[in-house]
Each structure stands twice: as C-alpha cells, then as structure tokens.
Length: 627
Image 1: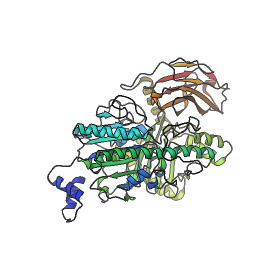
Image 2: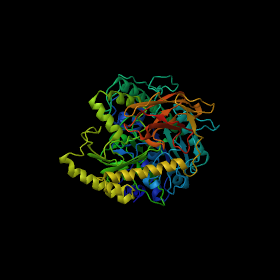
Image 3: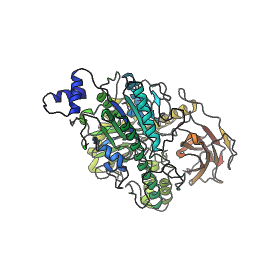
Image 4: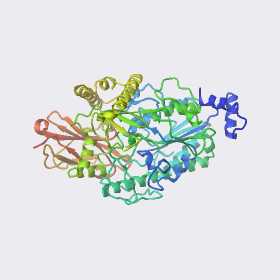
C-alpha cells in the first residue's frame, strides 16, 4: 500500500481534516496524484550533532537548519551507509548497497544497469537539476538524466561552491527552468560545507584570508571536543574552522530557502535534508563508527508531516531514501531496490523490522581497498574489518588533518593516544561497542564474556543480510577466524583495484604522462600541477615525511592528492594516504616506514584527482635507499 492510498484510507473515517490533507485526498480520490516539487538539500561532511536541533553542544551553529527541521519530521536514528562521499551519495539515489551498484569507490561505472533518482523523476515528468557534487552523485559522469547542472551559471561560469549566493542563484535558476518547462522540479542542491578546506583554513591548519565569511565565526575556546578526539590547542583550532564552516553551510541553506520562498512554491515542495556522512576528522569520516554514519535527516512533506515531530524509535538508512521519495511522489520503480520506504512513518505510523542499519565500506578516494561491514542496532555496533592484519595501515581521508598530525606526534609520548593512533591505523578484525553507553566507540567489547550472546546475534543478522543482498564478502565473513582467508580476500580486492586503476574503467579520462622527480625538489614545467620534495634520508622503522608542492589553478578548486609509499624494485604498495589541496602551497604526508623494507629501497607516487583514471597528473619518484 502506498502512502497515497494510506492517506486516503485514513481519511475516510475522519470528519475533520486539514485543508492541505483534504485537497490531497480529493486529488487522490479523483485518480490524479498531485505532483509536488522535490527539493533535496545535502551538506558535505557534517556530523549530526553539529546541528543544534540534533544536540550540538555549541550554541548557534545552525539557526536556519534548526528552524527548518522543526517544520517537519526529524529522524534521530538515521544513518548513511558509507563514510565517504561518492559511494554514499550513490546509495542515496539508487536504493541499492554499493556491492549491488558497483559504485564502491571514487571511480566511474559507465556500465551501471540500475535506475537512478534522476532517471525516475525525469521519466515521471519532473525537471531535474543538480548543484555541486555532480560527478559524485551518479555512477558515471556526465549523467544524461539531469536536465541542468547548476554548478555553472547560464553563461557557463563555474560558481563558487563555498558562497551562499551560489545556492540562492542556483536554486532560483533551477526553479525558473522548471517553470519555463511547465514541469514540477526535482532539485538536488549539495552544499559544499563543512567539507575541507574549512573556512579560513590553510593546508597546514593556519588561518588564511577567506572571502566567504560565515554569519558567525567560532573561536577555539568555544568549541566542544568530540569524545572520539582529544582536547588540545591544535584540535580546538581545527574544530573552530569546522564549526565556522557548519555555520557557513547554514547560511547556504538560508539562501536556498529564500529562493524557494521567492518562487512561491514552498507549500507545494517536499524538502529532504541530510549529510552524506560525518565530520572529516579521525574516527568519523572514512569509517563505519557511530559518528561516521549518524546523519541529521529530516523531511517536510506538505499535508503529511506535522511540524515539530521527531522519530526516535525507528532506524532508517540512506538506502531507504529513493523508495521513500518514490512513494511520496507516486512513482513506480520498475526494478529492484535494497532499501524500503519509510514514508508511513511520516504519517505517524510504525514499521516493523527497523531495529538495525547496515553500513558498508570498500575503497577510499585514492583507490585503497579497506573493506568493512557493520551492523548497528539502537544498543550495539558490530564491525568486521577483514583488511586488519596488524601491519596494514588503512588509507583514510583524515590523515592529512591537523588533528591527525597532532595525534601522531603526541602518540610518541602519550600511552592513551598511542593506543588510539594504533587503532586508527591498524584497527582489529572485529569490534563491538555499546552505542548507548559509548557512542564515541572507545571501549571495544569484542572479547567481553558477558557480551558474547549479543555478539553472536549481531553476527547472525549480518550474515543473513549478506545472503539476502548477495554480498561478495559473505565467504570471508564465514571464515573470519582464519587469518589466511582474510588475507587472501583482501589481496584479491587490492589486485582488482590496482588493475582497474592501471587499465582504466569504461570511459574514464586517460591519465597524464608520468612525471619523474629527483631526490630533491623536481623541476617544474609550466603545465605541472604537483612535484615531489623528497626527504634527504629514509630510515626503516621510522616515520618519513614527503612534501608535495602544488600549483592548482583556481578553476580546479579543491583537489584530492593521493600519495603512495612503495617498497622494493617492483614498487609494491606499502601505504597510501590522501590529502586535500587547493591553490599554491605545500602538502605534507607522513608515512611509517616498515622495519623490513623490501629490497632496501622505497619510492613514492602521487596523483591529482578523485581517481587514477581521471587524474589531472600522476608523478613517480625514483627509488630511494632506505637504511
């Protein structure tokens, strides 16, 4: 039964209905479902508890979003599936888990067979538009079912995605274009904050001039310290930039709403708001912890949702978003989806079997495979990390942050941070946390005798999900106690990823020719974007810092720099990390060199861009002696 038929059946015994609901029921009874506009607003890298309405400890981070959320229904137990952007957003608009779309990392999937939100809305007569995160929101780019890419203005000039005016202008352009086409609109407006670079933050965490000043700037002395981090001046400074960026995201949402109000279509528009995953700091982004996936989700559906309501009972997931939106708009999906609609909850109904969510992680922006699966209930979080073998270092998106560098530095003398740093890098094959008592995931209960019954129940539920969704990790999960089986599985995953990067996939753009660098700073051609500045010496068993000079044109905006540490004459990958960079500057990446370096030599490789195939430039250093 659809939400439309539910509303109709619920309305029959009632004599008193609101005008909006009455009109909706009348339309449905006449057999003509009204076409409401759909406005989807996402924010980038924002933890749920960074917003006041979701419990932020810092006042005044989000006055506009808080007020908007109170106009509809909030979902206090909502989670995204993936802790990084590209695969997370593809889950949202496909209704499928990453292993069922092929969008497991930051690469193009031109042979994707599933239908996307844009396809379904466009076929149903909607005018579709998107602003920012365009290549991250579909399995390949450019995607044919967007009627307009609002990231550029009508004259083709790229808009500044950190400026509030971009979002008012883009929203107004999309709404007007839909009106000109005599169609309802479906707009996906992706606010760039609080993604790195944060407001007024340089590559090394220093304060730099920023023309896009938020309506309120927070200082280091004001900010709360998340329990999964630690109190330190460096951390406080980075968090002050983060929370100022949260406020700037709030300003962008205010700009969108102003354009919507100016159009006169607010009362006929479904509004969905959420973040793609948690904050871009250690133990949040690129992970499957509670704060990695807990998203500030709410919906406003005219004539359906009641203002000031919140669902604190049901667990909903980003994989449920597409089926929910389709039910709300009366659109049929001709294929399959892994998610299921939670539209009945918007009417105040209940749903069975909403007592856990699944989280899935496969690959980061640099192409490193660190597969994980996770099941979270209201009480517990279980995580399976087959890649963890005690020596392999996870390549996360947060190792370039000031907070991470400070943790790595303090870990040399602080036993607590040493343990946290070791967990950050190496993890353990299985983790279990009591989310109710320990939402920051500090106390791993995997070996707790009193929790073994609950642990086995969670494992059983995860296995059943793997069977139902045909997850390729099923076999290694069943052999999770076998270290050799785990290694074989991860090695095969890494081999596939490296082959894909080396050979390209589909229509991805061919990489630029390799640039060679000397042991010192490489000479730069006018067209070069990056060059190595390598250390004078490399010692096995010690850390080493490689510096990359970058000169990125303004029109490229912020770019991912992926840096790989290789060992031996065959260039075997030892570690890989990513950092964000923009403009001119120097990025520093620190690796821990193994005590036993293959062949006694190491080398470095780096590329600019979200994936190897479409990289702007790839460089490779000459081998350097390690010893």
